[in-house]
Amino acid sequence: PPPPPPPPPLFFFKPKTPTEIRLSLVGSEMCIRDRGRKESPGMSTRGTQSRIDAMELSQLDLSALVLPQANALATLNGAPCEFFLHKEEWFRAPFGASHFNNPEATRLSLEFDVSQSAALPAMQTLDEAIVAAAMRQKLFGSKSAQEVRESYHSLVVSAPKYNQLRFRTKFNTRGFGLSYFWKFPERTRLNPEDDLKMVLLRPHLQLKSFWSENGKWGMSVDCLNVLGKTTDDAVCPF
Image 1 (cartoon, rainbow, N blue to C red):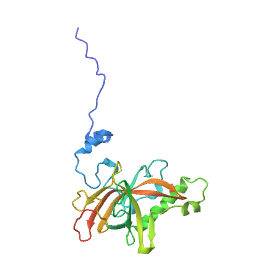
Image 2 (spheres, one colour; image 1 turned 180 degrees about the vertical axis):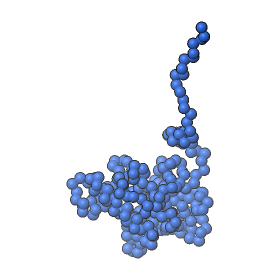
Image 3 (cartoon, helix red, strand yellow; image 1 turned 120 degrees about the vertical axis):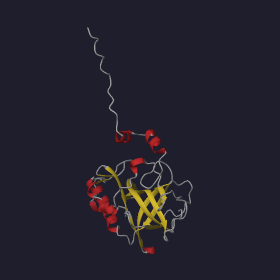
Image 4 (tube, rainbow, N blue to C red; image 1 turned 90 degrees about the vertical axis):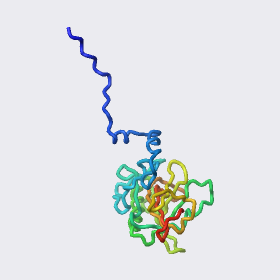
């Protein structure tokens, strides 16, 4: 009689496409994948966390904003809430992190002068959306809407002494959430420890974590990537 057919294979492996391989990489595999990649704005060692295709703030539908609780991050339609203030405008940051006075500091403030920005209404809308989300999610229990609104520390703040409106952000000098600074148009790395005052900036931002202190509450906005150029279009480190 003819020999019996060979037994069926115990496992069948379907070859993965390049896209499936990329999406399945996690942890140290992502570090290996990204290690040889040339860094450029919107594509840093954070992998997909920092996207150059993030929209301008004015284009976001903030009605779907969800504020974080505990150590979570704010989300918009289930994804990180990333945005540019404006993709064409450049901003001055005359105050905040102009100097690193404390070498132990790992998280510094950076305020952008947005007094004349076309995106200012969108920034004010973001503040309103944050307050609305806090009330919708009942983050403050029995507090009235007026109490929630009055205790909120806006991202857009007034500096009467300088006749300015500023947008408050943070940036990290080390660690997993390290903020990346770049020359424009070369897209090579900049050193943020030098003076920021004479450089125009274009930040790529993420609405991140909730904070509460001394009867006030608010949201932090982190710089992910920041392009910088001098006022005469020449590039200098900052």
